Structures are given as C-alpha cells and as structure tokens.
Image (cartoon, rainbow, N blue to C red):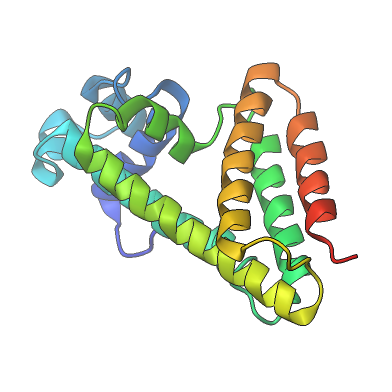
Length: 197
C-alpha cells in the first residue's frame, strides 16, 4: 500500500483493510484487528484514538492505492487512446475481483452501503472519492469523443455516472452470484455502447 507508512501502523492499516472488506466495518472488532496484525492493543491505541479514526485512515489509504494502481495506469494514462484506457480499466477491475475467492465485492461500495446512512465522516470521504472516480471516467470519455472513438450523443458526465453506477452493480452481482459473468458481459456491453458508429 502507501510507502509513507511503515512498521506497526502499516500492519494495523493493512489488517484493518482486509477485515473491513471481508467482514464489514461494524462487524470487525479491534481485537480482530490486533489478532490479524499481530500488534498489541496498546500499540494500536498509540497510533489511533478510535476504531473510526483507524477506519477513516484505512479508507483514505485504500483510495490512494486505488488511484496509483488502478486509475493512474488506466483511465488517466494519456499515453493510451481513450478506448484502450477504458478497456484496460475494466481488465484491471476484473483481475482484482477474480483474485477474490470467494468474491467479497467492492471495498468502497461495501463501505458506502454499510456506513453512509449512519456516519457522515465516512460518507463525505466516499462521496469525494466517487466524484474523483467519475471525473477520471468523464475526462477519458470526453477525450474519446474528441478523438472519434466514442459516440458523442450523450453528455460525458452522464456516461461517467452511468458507467460507475453500472460497475458497482455488476460487482454486487459478482459477489451475490459468485460468477464473473456479470462483470465480463457488462463491461463488454458498455464498450460496445460507447463505440462510435
């Protein structure tokens, strides 16, 4: 993950991310995190005043990792044509979800469903992240329209919102049905719909 955090704090954040993704934030106890990380409870409290503080830092760290490992080399990679950038993005997302056995869903989508109705701190961080993700999609789509790769009869922002919402829904279906088919067929459909005729 982030190279700016090391030692026991890094272990705590990494373990918290795994457990929050697998079990949910509310179902994960601090004892679960100390057991997973091998760090003592007193050491955890040295770095974090509360479970919420840990959860928010783990979320922000995961967002930074997602930007660096997913968005930057795909949607934001202007050395590639826009259609190839979007296709690379879908491949990267699919590879990640194939690696999860059994599938556990999107770490951001799961947390949004669990926390956004009850905790404004999580909601605000997730809202800003999803806006940033949409921005990356919108720029890619806009550039694809300008280059003639993508159809131009829909507003790029609307298409970006649709793609992100559709992606989160597909990942939910992957988690529910335990098959990659919704993501594989859904991403192919989006690429086909966007293609300029």
